[in-house]
Structures are given as structure tokens and as C-alpha cells.
Length: 404
Ligand code: ASP
Ligand code: MG
Image 1 (cartoon, rainbow, N blue to C red):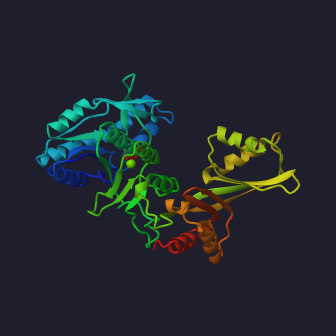
Image 2: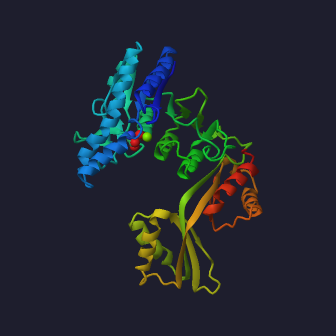
Image 3: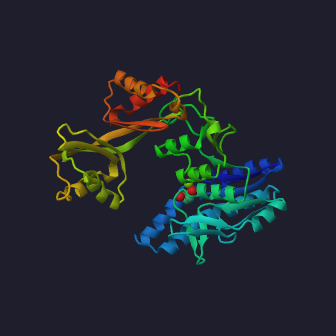
């Protein structure tokens, strides 16, 4: 008998029929003898719809009231799921964030879970019922309803798994797990059976969005095993846990890409201590995230070229900020390219395997793909290339590193 958290995302509870299927999944687990806490998202699209309503009133809608509004989405699915279970003859009860309570701190619309009381829910589990808890919501020390940021139901599930000391946390979603690349566009993509937290974080920050990254991070810190799987099939999903899950026979676990990058190059930047800081400080202060930075060695020690990448949305703003900083940052010219993409290979196996970098570059060259920028971490190598060549690059790397 295990004690488990089972989380269902928005598409899994996207209609009354789907909520009834979720109830059936839970009933089956319950009859096996597991103690179950189910965490639910709002119905797919609901949170966006509620935000729209608030914006119809004001773009600066009161933040406290926005949380009251948004938390209602998860309240609806919690009640429907508990009712559906009751209807199947299973004892079940919903517990709102404020009833438990799930204590949060920080600003409205973007709070953080700091603690929760386990007594009421544990009593209910001991009395043989399935507890339903809405994701995404909590209560502040002042007693106001709060929400914890978009996609926050994953974070709720992981926090509950930790604080209730459950054996593991299952994340039910609309895909069958984590894939070696995007299965929607690359039919050769393969489902990954197990993956380490670190690899999962690299994969999701690079665009393979299956779970909220901060929730994976929390799970990593507390060494909580996660299991991502589909609500709509019986297939085993992907298990995410510590380094013991790394398959060292495989050098690379996945190939990811993002198509919303841009590149900026400054030519002949004055080469003296502090210029890089002067270039990037205004960007940072304006919440612009810089991704890769490449600075050339200056042959004469006076001038250098500097290239960096960022999200395409931020490009115009970044260029404006740099141009308006002419007093501090001197350069000959600035150019940019917004038709670039980032392609990365991720795998903990590369730590122990020499030659991965060269193999990646050689295979791209064979496809006549020019590399515009490179960055590496211990378990990831990323290149910036022309956006048009993304598909070719992903296909090639997927096959060269034996993922097909
Ligand atoms: N309903 C919230 C959202 O759409 C939380 C979640 O689904 O995880 O962001
Ligand atoms: Mg969601």
C-alpha cells in the first residue's frame, strides 16, 4: 500500500466526461489499496478565460480579487471530481487551499507555498477516502486567497508530496511522457522511460514543456520521484528521479529546440574592464533575459566583437536600451538577426563520453548548417543556427546520437 499524490492537468479534466474518466482511474488505484491525494488543475482554457474577464474590466484589475477569481477554476474541478467519485461509490471530499490551509507567502498572483497543515486531510485518508485538493491556490498569512503562478498546479502537487511524505507523485497529462524530441513534428521521437531531474530541467527549459520547471526543481531538492504519464492511455510514462536513472549507455537523452530566439552583435566594442557589465546591466534591470554570450579575443587588446542571444520578443527593447547607453558603451555598429533558433542536445551521458561536441558540430556541417553561436553546460550543448535549418538539424542530431 502506497501513499501517493496524483495530479491531473487542465486537459485531463477539460470536460465533465473527462472528469468522470479521471474518477475511474482514481477508483482503480484506490481499490488496490493506495492512499490517494488527487490534485487538479482548472479545466483547460478556464484560467485564460477568467483572466480575460478581468481584463474586460481593467488591465490593472485588483490583484487580490484576481486571485479570488482565478482560484475558482480549480474549485470547480475539485468539486466535480469529488462528486464523480462519490457517484462511483467511492468516498471522496474536496479541500480548498484555505480550508487545509496551504500557507503561501509573496505577492498576489505569484505566491509561493511555504507550508501546509496535514491533519484534516490525513484523517480523511485514514478513514478511507480520496482527498481532492485544488492546485494553484493557497492562502496568505493575512487570510487572503492567493495563487502561485501559471502552471502552478504542478508545484502544488510536488509540495503536497513532500509535506505529506508520500511515496511518489504521479503527473497525469495529455502526452505519454517526455520524448527524445518533439513528437508532434518528429515522428522518430521516442518516449524516454527514465530521466534524471537535471536532464528533465534542461529539456524543459529548452522547450520540451511537460511539467513546470520550478516544480521539477523542488522535486529534485527533496529527491521526490515523479512519474509523468497520459490520462488517455494505459502506457507507462516517464519516471523522473535522481542520477540512478541515468542511462549511461546513451550519450544523449534528447534533442530540443526553440524557435523564438534572436541574436545581437556589437562590432568593435571598446575592450576594457566593465564594458560587458555596462552592456548587460540595463537589460537585466529591464527584465530582459540574455541567454548566450560570446566575446571574441581582441587581437590588439583595444576592440572586441560581442554577440549575445535573447528571446525574440525582447529584441527591439534590448537594441533600444543599448543604443541609449552610448555614453557608457562605445562600439562601431550593432546588428541583429531574429530568424535564428537554438538547437540543443541534452544528456548526462556526455559527462563521461569524449567527442560529443565534435560529433555534433561535424554532423551539422555535413548538413551544411552554419553555427552562429555555441554554449555548453555539463549535460547540454546548444547552438544557434538559421531558423530555416532547425528541422534538418534536429533530425540529423536525433539520428546521429542513436535516438531514432
Ligand atoms: N490553472 C492554472 C493555470 O492554467 C494552474 C495550472 O493549470 O497548473 O495556469
Ligand atoms: Mg495547466
